[in-house]
Amino acid sequence: DTGSAAATPEQYDIQYLTPVSLGTPPQILNLDFDSGSSDLWVFSSETPASQVKGQAQYNPSKSSTSKEVSGATWDISYGDGSSSSGNVYTDVVNVGNATFAGQAVETAQQVSSSFTSDTNNDGLLGLAFSTINTVQPEQQKTFFDNIRDDLDSPVWTADLKHNEPGTYNFGFIDDSLYTGKIAYTDVDSSDGFWMITLDSYSVGSSTSNLSSRAFHHRPSTFPSPSDSASTPLTGIADTGTTLALLPDSVCTEYYSQVSSAANSQTAGGYVFDCDATLPDFTYTVGSTTITIPGEYINYAPVDTTGEQCFGGIQSDADIGFSIFGDIALKAAFVVFEDDGSSPRLGFAQK
Ligand SMILES: Cc1ccc(-c2noc([C@H]3C[C@@H](O)CN3)n2)cc1F
Image 1 (tube, rainbow, N blue to C red):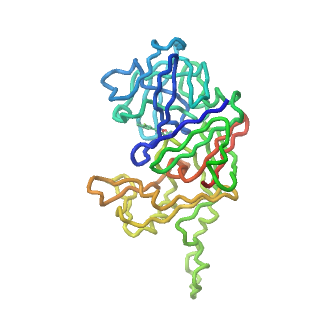
Image 2: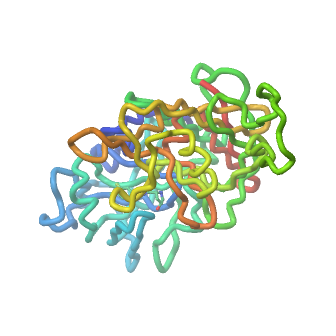
Image 3: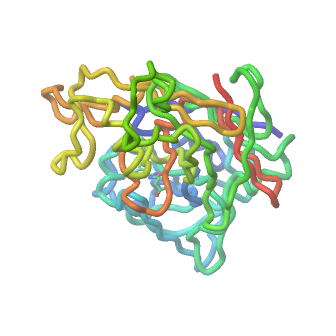
């Protein structure tokens, strides 16, 4: 079995939506595929009308293949403080022709205001590890965990793009979607996330090592060249987070190269003049180097004057690890591989 479906960005690539077919006859909803959580939940006939603003709603009573999971409930909250909760059914779920008959479909009986106002988003499809699925009393499996054994290969891939549709594939690696070689790194899934350590990062195309510049006498007190070119970054690959949330030291290093940049309390992060030239941000996995072009890091205008823009790289606020969200992932072809025992993440240029 294999599946392939488009990942279409909302404005500013804030999130990517992918059509999913639920039930019999098929009910199509556009879901936010999230490698940072593990619940498949949908706006439904059980969502109060006051909390629905244009979203498509899954109606289990209109599906001949739906079955209520008696006594099961779910309740989830996301990194930005939004939340949702409700009941659980199983039904046929089809993503680009990859199909599983008994997938847990979590119907929303409550969604927080940010989901209500997100009018094109009909729910989430979690692709992190099933150990953090929130259904009680019996935890449910993610779509990928359910279909993994039927897939030609135990992988799903993300080819997210800037301002244009990309692709989520299940069960195969499409060699036409990347260049060079895919470099793999081991995943630590003990917290339920696709957690990895990137071998190094660097800011800008200028070398991070001062000694490569015209050599002038450098008093011994001169700070040693920043060795970001060999500093690892540990974090989670999170397709459901818009930005790249990195350690404060990395943010400081990056925005020191942007003369108009400031860390604004009112804007809630680093902002700069919208016409600023931004340096690239590069990270390496093994022998593969991924370059996020500077223009990807001009995320969006802060307000309608369009003078100040919000950075795509922001602080991870001491969560304890970085969050490699869409800003970081859309520059790469990413392979999420899990044979059930030793998960890996692969990165390739494209
Ligand atoms: C309105 C809305 C809010 C949040 C999210 C959301 N989806 O994935 C994530 C990240 C953060 C972490 O929780 C898991 N992945 N956040 C989506 C929304 F449509």
